[in-house]
Length: 100
Image 1 (cartoon, helix red, strand yellow):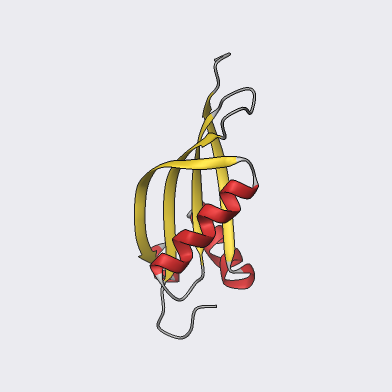
Image 2 (cartoon, helix red, strand yellow; image 1 turned 180 degrees about the vertical axis):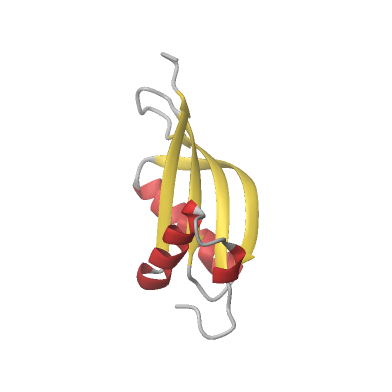
């Protein structure tokens, strides 16, 4: 969706399972969003996250990226490159559950 010269939008978000879901879980979502504006990218990320049963509690990082933002061995490069193809990549990292 982004055109030439438009950067990828990256968000690192703290998310929590929606009310009524068990077990209640806190996680982090890293989002690579290939959308024309930051606001469009963030809105789409929130929709995708909600569709998976989570809600955003906090924005931890919010910035634009280019391929040169990564070294060749950086794990994030593969997600960036995948988002260039699919427009959106979200990776969840579970931080804690009540049982932990």
